[in-house]
Image (cartoon, rainbow, N blue to C red; front, side, top):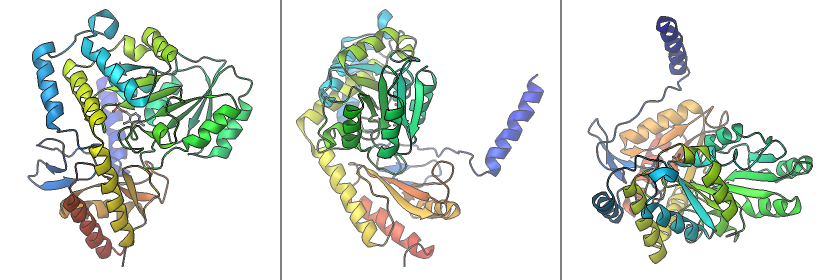
Length: 396
Ligand SMILES: *Cc1c(COP(=O)(O)O)cnc(C)c1O
């Protein structure tokens, strides 16, 4: 049996390679941070991590995790409702809902699981899910597991959203679902307008704050802070794997009854292991740090503004962004790959994205700014962009 299957897979893999879509992993041999060392021995500045607040290698979080290893052990060997709940898990859930100004929160092993387990327990055939076309893969998969009617609107297109809301009026409940920040462009969902439409057409809202939590809004509370809608959105999902320390873990937070129902019926919560105590402890420490100071957010925002200002005055074409994601537009797929590899030669690690990850002829280099970058890191990045940009005729 395997002989045929092996041949089938080998052919498919060869096709992936031929299409230039085969993913290779670069191996890092030191902690995740602004300067990383890769297995070739080269030291480079990292501009492609989701380490927005520079917390992946933060000493306070490491200390908190070590302490929890000593006092609460290594793993839970259980799901939450059998014997997988420690005081730390409950405390972290409380911190999450305080941070977002919501009523309750529930932890998952990852945001992929939070999104996978949020729709099916809450909605059924009589209901409608109205989803932005650029929503994350985990939202798409979560929606697939749910029997609700599906509607889709073009990215951030409020006319199309309104149309979906009109045609779904016969359904019992309507839930609009959007990413807070879209990962390829860095644009923020127009939550103010979504909220207005939700009010007008009697719909609920779910926002996935994975790329926006810790980043967007004066104090990093996400898109609900940016649009003055704290406490007004029914469901928020997010990750501990990006700005919030970058280890592992996801959550859903929002209305009390929603969270209660998820604890009863959400399959990735009921049938998958509890997060390790050290991860919960580091998460608690992270929220404590954020409640004491806004330095990380302030750094991130000024770093982003600094990068954008320099790049624009050098003549680069950057998508309008309100996050820490800056899409440097090159349009041509081959150019984006050549540009990224020349950047690596200059000691700057960035990734070029092209079709089908982004639309055809919309190839770009995605730069992700971090509070962990020093101004001189950003200078080196911009100087490399200018050098390579001139070499390849992108800027003059
Ligand atoms: C990264 C991401 C996820 C997945 O988060 P994990 O915790 O890594 O599973 C989900 N949704 C969005 C929008 C993301 O960007």
